[in-house]
Image (cartoon, rainbow, N blue to C red; front, side, top):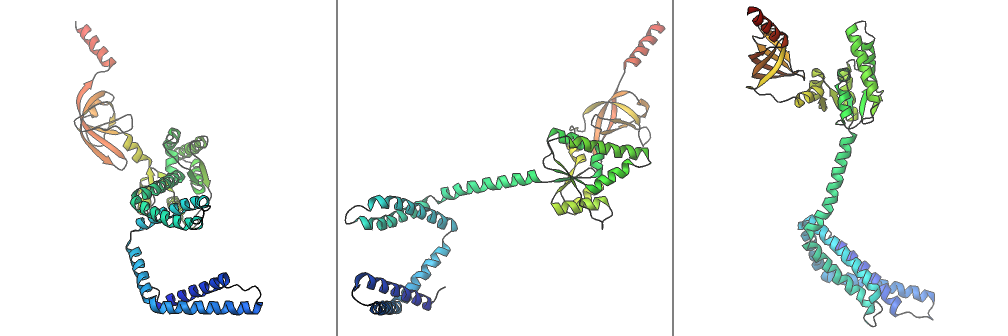
Length: 373
């Protein structure tokens, strides 16, 4: 808080300035020499400063207390009130200055009207600003919120996503890109391409086909205009594992990772890297089946346990059927008994409720009936 010396200096400076202005306005002697003018100006400044010093000695303490009270009340006043008052004051002074020029031509009182208008309209502006503070803050807050929303949307749109080897070979990422649900740039690291090429050149026919499938998927994705495919050449020679390089790159460029690799998914989550798992998306889109419902399906093969049969839904969900081994190749209605959620997806367990005879069974039965007759 400013002390007495500060206010004393302020009063002395103000007094000196007033003394100088008073002398030049009311005591100008045209025939005096330049030396006398300099002397009189100096004396006016000194006298004005002395008067200011005397006033500061008499009223400095009271002025300091007044100033302290004003600062205290300003500190206690909410920031919203101060902002609203300043906005109202500025608007009031602008209106006062617009009216001042036209009213300044009025005789006698014309020169004083701008000052009077500035005081009156300034006070009115402060009063209106304080009364309308909520509306003013909401008005400016509206644009602030719009800017925040736009920045958030732009940030989400700009969020890059890194594709790993498994999700490229899987191929479902191509269908997702074609639907337009995936936004932002898709990043293909150079070391992922190298791994794909290595798989495509493998002596193992299964691996070779998988690698070539991945390269074909990338070529098709390049032709889709809905997502921009960017190949990044940044590599991390100190890291040997491709998964570790992907996580490191995602951290460096603040990107998400798209994968269907269970291990990469878990490691990325531990490292704090956002992950988009294709398997999770696929499971979320599967039809909801509850215990007690009936499903019509065809038993494909025997299960791991004795007497079990295995069937699949159209979305690839495995159904383990109790006592279904003897009905392999036949369509059956099963009653769902339980559902198990695994990292690889859902498994449905059920038991046979009814065997559906196909056309050949019906034909055999009819031939047997006719021959029996």
